[in-house]
Length: 301
Ligand code: RIB
Image (cartoon, rainbow, N blue to C red; front, side):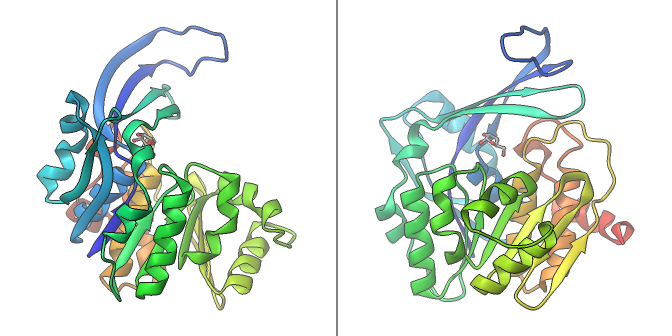
């Protein structure tokens, strides 16, 4: 069982030929809505990878809530611990440019109501997996990491979006998953020594005894444990929309590890899934099924 404690949003998505500069107006070509939120996206990815998944989070008592939870519900994610609050369902305003790149502004709404007592009621046990991100309050994230450690659960923390204050608890997670920008921003705060990113990742793993995973977009993914270092190349694709690719990677990585894969094959599985998620528009609608990932995996080397 994988427990995801995190955000649930409705994504309001505009496609534009190119992303505007500050103060600039550009014409859009298409508007759509889709379920999103880093927590919910990762929950759906883990479920589509084949894991049993439950979601702990919050939505509003509004019309967006049903849309935001629709794909999780259809996929069979346990939603019994998603609470309804007076605050509105979280939303994300997303612009996707012609090259597949994006900019996102998130309005947390109900996600800000996820709190330490919600984590306590999760009833985490030995051997459970818990997957967290930074789109709910950092206090709740920190409480979840403490609870997971006390219970003997395996914790994975995705450091998106970047929050400097999270530096204080990164080392409480068994697996830290950052993109290259996030990792580089934590380097100074954590005083990680080294001439390059690999050395700094090794410094983190050596000091903390944890695993650090850094995603590099088109350059693949690197991971350091206290004893080993891996570099898994990217599966080559031409991206249509990169929204949710990192979330797909995290959900698949958690699923791979929870089914007993060693770190390197779990990274390969997750890297292919993340690449395939860039081939369709939207975050959750683009998350591939396990059969689609397995079909491509042998070609990924
Ligand atoms: O990581 C992508 C997600 O970030 C989107 O689905 C959006 O909701 C924001 O949370």
